[in-house]
Length: 441
Image 1: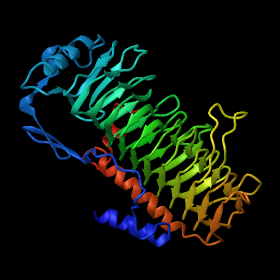
Image 2: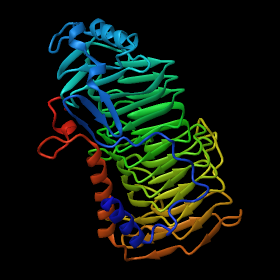
Image 3: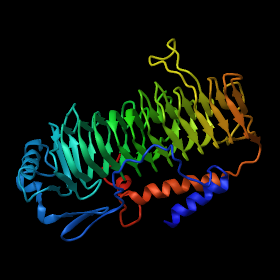
Image 4: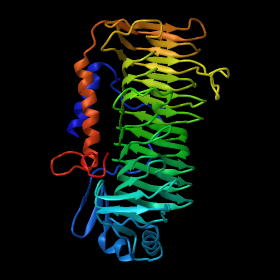
């Protein structure tokens, strides 16, 4: 709690946030409980507020699962999961430490928890598997957990189709992508996404009330979080990084294809093609209090209407810091209008020279937008603004000044990273067991 108070104190010092933090027109936060750290006792697994009794579990090795074997473990684990699904007194399949190889997908069953000894300790990996490693289709998870595992598949990691009420907690998704389609009420908390291929580490479509919080996205090929046709979702407190600038048109967080009423806040996004990208008729999204550090193209690109961009920090954007523009048919497969957006109290600055026609802090080429209270540093040559005249755009109280307190911004970034680290499993040295495990790169 003290860290959270300090965080908001720093942001208020920056002048980025109004005193009233929440607004009546904010999208609702999905009512999926915050899990927090997990722990184990001799008789229970504790995940947040949930207590899973070991007396209600079975050990998958009793069904023939064998660690370290080159043979396919699909049949053995399927037997254990089936037994748990069909036994009234059993709800958990426990998989001890070790590496287990699979030539066929693992199928989850409704109401069955899948628990390992920890990321980098219990490793489920593909054995020449071209489909998704972990699958489920048309099930109600009954708030079951997948936790304490490394899931490793180079091309495809997780696929959920029409699944609801499921938690992924303290899982390493190594390689491939996590794909949800037609899902609802699923949480991903305290996980590591690493070496993910394709458009995004989380690349999903047509989902409701998904909660993505306290995760670390690391070494992504093109982008990190893709929220296609997502509604009423919450994406917050994620550390989204790449080792070097990605030359990609995707983004750290991307909201395409009628993504509606989502709340995206308190994320740190570094070295992506774009920091945040809202496109193809995605409306009524609130994007606030995020930090975008380094981008090949725009820090934030908005090509849809009626979104609110508020109290974000944009640093070292490769082109425009914030750009609002229509997507036209000649240049986009999904044309859309970008009117009536709100750009409120955002901070833009650079740490190196950014001179030229592309380096504009606030560029608005559409109509009916509100541009109020934004602060832009002039120190390294970035132009202030290019707001389309006429068309009902409202602009006032924007500042173009040389001095910006970068130490406060660095403290803000540190706070986000520390909060993410608190929710990742830690080993005895205090380092993330995901990052330091033998199951890493």
